[in-house]
Length: 429
Ligand code: MLT
Image (cartoon, rainbow, N blue to C red; front, top):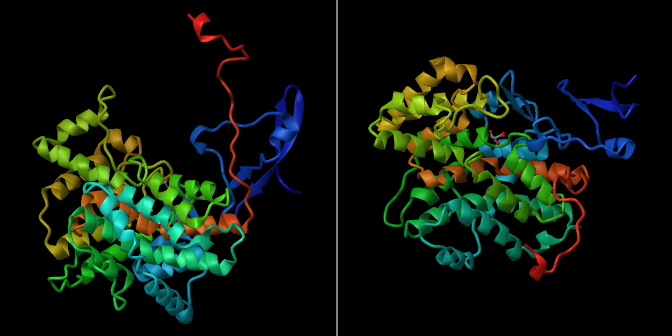
């Protein structure tokens, strides 16, 4: 017999179906609640509300578990390539050799962007934030490929759009960086891997033969994998709700980039470094800033600590922390910000105030440090998050379309003025 939940409203008893996921998670299905009772539910920020069923990513916030299509991220980060993980998220299975070669070749063949887009870059102010550039550029791709705008497009067109996005996002990201620095752009090279190509486009110069350091490209591969998806986070939910109106995939991803930009979401890794720079420029008195973070009357908060979902530790942070230590050791980095970060980490992991509140270093704390060690400029950190999260956004959008999810249109509880008549302006107080 299927499980149900009973509620009593205005003296009437109602039964609502309970659904159970493949990992034993349970939900009360309220899709018919308003029709049955006239009531809706209210859950600001959706902390207790599921927006969909999904087979893409499973996470357990209490146990610190994160799996993509059932595969633990610890194994994928250690053994897979980013394009393998992108294929897994989008097509639901790890690719065999033939499939991986096909996918890799298709991505490689679409890394160039239309030369007309160079004029867009020239129009941006030189100090434009690359996330603002990227969100605009990705949305404008829909104008270069108008067939992507057809809501009844065949899957072959959707698949081409998916491959174009994965291929072109790093190219556009690197061009945004080069444009802001007044450097000549570097075109993609087809004989390089996905991460090597990005590093080449970012740090290569026509006048020099830039050699990609395998330590850096390996670390970047791991970082992109660890950011590839995270179920119904703010930006993935944004991609889904924009796509639910049958807006094209480029526009949906552009909206996801905009949502990720926020310092409470993907912008947190940039905010971590800015916080460390503030502490360093203030003389490096760590205890002063830790006390400020504890002081309720002080607006200062530690960035990169704690998480909405993970209550004890962020499994990605554990992997990135080790990768950061390896990279710093191998590159022999000596960076005062990283010293401050390590001292801050020690305090946060030992101080009862932070331990009791679950304010442990999260994925953004360590990713900011490792991106800095890899030579990625601070205002490009969230761009790196976007490049990693792109396959997850695509997989979420594709699942929403394949499941035929309805247009997202939440209800509300109105708390404004009651009915009143218009008063001519000369009669108003
Ligand atoms: C993410 O990976 O998207 C962030 O940890 C935020 C989240 O999941 O809410």
